[in-house]
Length: 127
Image 1: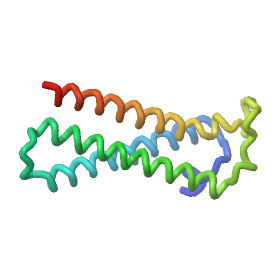
Image 2: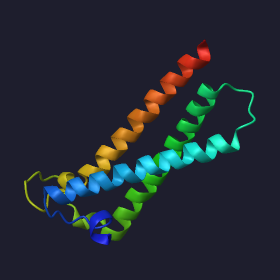
Image 3: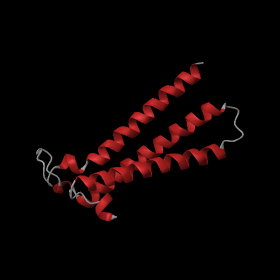
């Protein structure tokens, strides 16, 4: 498990795909659990169910983004910046951008989901 999520060694495309799938599954499970816990806790709210779900979704996405930032900080802490070659782009195991591709994709996905949910909620509140 350490080799898959914490190590920055590049073993090949299947390992990157497995890491990306694992991170997506973890992110979706965290969002689902935050939505479930938040919906149970705010049962007796005066807001409509749509607004409550959007607010819980935004809170969950914010927490997931925070946890992702902590994960990337731990990744750098365990590996150090000396293990990355920042200004080289080669198709081998020393390519920093290939090794960090799953984390970059998850971060972009989480930010875009947060932005999309925020826009939907502001439109819902304007009505």
